[in-house]
Image (cartoon, rainbow, N blue to C red; front, side, top):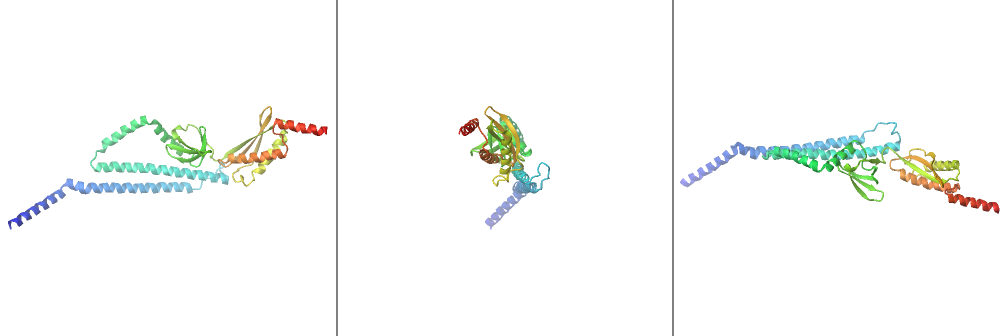
Length: 318
């Protein structure tokens, strides 16, 4: 009987101890309040990430689908189509950057809030982060410069993925863009990684339209009126060829002789094309114009003029 009484007293003491431990405010805060707060913080972070992603995706989709204003500068169907494709790609790039920035901000806040609930004093961490940030800023100025340059490239729409640009001596198509690096694929297939902070001067061959400029050299002995007529008529006809007619935006313009040389004179022709298509159009026109000049017996070099003169003299003698 006495043993049973002692056992009952021990059980009562254990129950009282557990009850007192559970009723202790510190225990309640450690076992209930803090886990619930941490869970709430994680749920809020997930909801904010979902909302931010939805909002950015909707804004990106709205920016891509909206109808652009018709302006005198963009009134051609092909030209408008190219501009729309370029604008859509830019909106996608901005959307990717926006989602990354939102995720970094939201989850940085969530981590700091969770650490605060775990009893970690985050004030020194924030102060240390500020000091470390200043130190990194001084030690990695080029990296900071890359990020700021990339941000302004996107905001100012200097170029985007799919554009053909020239950076220094490199001409290529933009395959990928980030806030730090622009990746170009040149005509030989080489992949160039250019830091945005190093881009001081960039030429965009895909903005609105391009111009194919041809320099056609012929002998100074050739008739300039005949040469101009042959070149212009051939170029106008060639622009209707199926190979290039969909990328030509206007009629060729004969600018006339642009360079004199003791042995030849160069005739210049200009054609407005779709962005980035000027090289293909120029090659096609050069082929057609060269064939037409041969058909019309246009003297192309000083040696040709000598041969023509020799043939004429031989014909007169006979």
